[in-house]
Length: 224
Image (tube, rainbow, N blue to C red):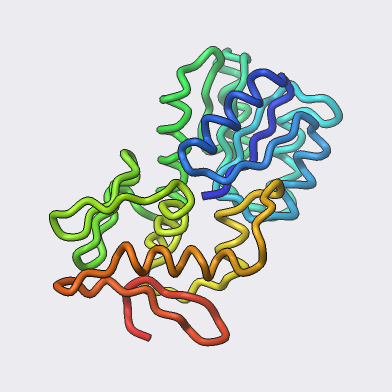
């Protein structure tokens, strides 16, 4: 999944971006409010992690402009402002969750995962498609009783396809959700990773399929 991190304190921004990437998220990061608004309105993110004390444009003004532009991206406010009035104002302006500094990274990660599930209308952290089971909390994949070992990038691609099971997902949509602006991957990388997944998910006794929808993209499960 793709996350936009808007945090102006460089050590924290760097640590959070690294931690989220290690968990398989594609991350774009900025410490400037105006640049953050540009990122947020110009791209399709699964979650935005938003600090309030930002140069250029403060977080609440950014959130207000984001919602006024019609963007429905889930927003997790991350701030040192811990009064009841601050929390109420942030939520009333359209934030989906609010986490006060200092915090544990594990809690932030759990809240981000919860917002991703909410976006794709899933309450259960486990996704099951035929014999395939994906534990999105533990980031583990099983085919029948056998665990399938995936790289972080392979897992990110599989989870995104699984959250849209039965739907045709275009290459551009995959690219937008699985890769960030810093990615130097070539244009055919989506097809390459689809090939990797097909090999790892192939079993003679199971029929979990990634269909190629010619000229359109890919579909996990469902019928072509």
